[in-house]
Length: 150
Image (cartoon, rainbow, N blue to C red; front, side):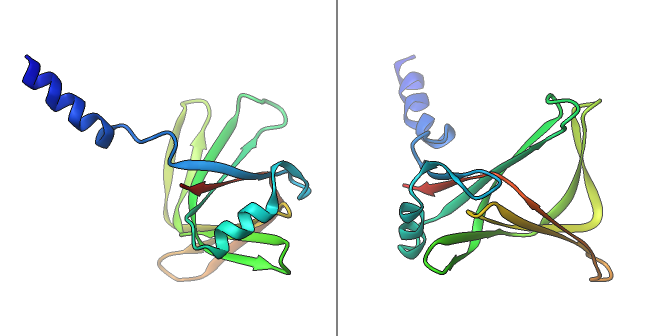
């Protein structure tokens, strides 16, 4: 019995992700105003080559329960004019949330990519994976939370 408990105790750190691996260093609103943190800390983390993760969300104005939250690693980062950070995520397959069934369906043959900035700007682009044709851009202002890996 003691051996089983010891084995479980030894493997728990590898099964349960550590809660302190990521630290929220900056949060901007859709207009690019700081909600939390100091932009200079985020800029320094980017310059130091730290891993950055973006979090953003959208909700229906008509029904606040219809909300999605996303988190993704920013794999291409840009500092503009020593004051704004842009983070681009890797392309993913498109998704369609169904709030009636509480499911998400993948969009066939559709790739989605997004870039977001601490100034609140974002641009997402969809592309047909078969033809390569760009099927759309969606520019809008979003609130972003910027996390840095410890």
